[in-house]
Image 1: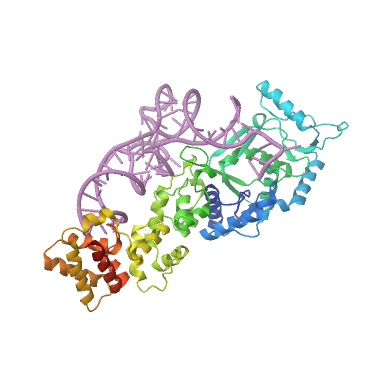
Image 2: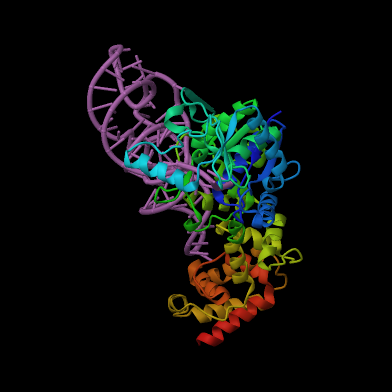
Length: 462
RNA sequence: GGCCCCGUCGUCUAGCGGUAAGGAUCCAUGGUUUUCAUCCAUGUUACAGGAGUUCGAUUCUCCUCGGGGUCACCA
């Protein structure tokens, strides 16, 4: 059974980097019919954990990701951690250290003055005497003083750390008794049955410490996969200052879950030359062994392309539903098929799409100056008049082709090019020089509204 | 600074000793379109540098340079 987990600390929302590792973990679990668990790492700041969990679950829900089982909150597991701390104490694998904070920082100052690595000197490692008065002890683990710790990483390969380079007897429980991060991570991952740890490679240097804890407690080692960071355009770790890092902001900007997930799965991972992945394909094909070793820069050009791709290929019924968040209730619109077909190919985001819909269905009150100057000159108003007469006289007007025939008639009868009628008509109908096909626009708004817009334009520009 | 990771077009990436170094995006040009967008063509741009190993290195090794991460009684 493959068990993965996503273990964010409660920052209040789900960000892009977290989402990517969550996605990888989710996909790998689903591929193996395993479990994808969620744990909130709130040992220190319990205050926002509930909201944070909700924000994450909300974002998961929007994206169609589901975690399995109950959410684990580290803040509620003190007794469990205490039990394992005591076990290590009893087995002599951990000990109480009475070094005061002052003494410790003095030690570090001397060490760095001597250009030595700053580390705890093991003063209380084998202490047998009477503890000093007035110092509440921390608990330190007896870490190996020499030898190698090898992290077998599924992405980076075997990484060798020398104990004397990186280790000391690090603290596993603070003076107030609360356990520290590396300790609870190891304990929880084991207790939750996690077999594959997929996380950012900023955790790589924590891994040896966690391995020490696994070994001290006699736990089976999971498989590690450290995925490279996502960098901003400056090449630094992506952070909140880099704009839209809140996943839900992408919903507001009009991105679809498919596009965002597809974008993220291809950031640092690949399957040959394939660019488009449905959710099913991702679940079928994702494998952490194909994760890139190097960091990737966050650049949303491709996200825009993917988003327009998914919009273009979405069924209209689904688009109508998605546009509801912008206050557009298209479900009952009798011309919604023509409308959505006409605009889905010209929008990068749902938000843009909504704006385009408004542009079509709203009677223009404003005409762009340059458009008026370019298109409503010469006999343009006369042409509009002739076309308007045909519209109002026509028997059946429903389809775009019905309107197209009328335009064709004017063109033929007057011996003019299509542009001679198209441009003025476009300005009359939309107030600007660009937009969807005119025959579609007229079919969508219908005969009366078409007439209204034509007469408005003529009246205003005569 | 110590330790660790990384280094192919601007960006995302394919490559796994022999390739004209491929795809995607972006950008540019042309075509289609009454317009814009879409779409379709075409084009510009990359193996950080230097030593080895080898008949042959983008691929293996070492060094240099560059970038990043991490060094808490934070997570």
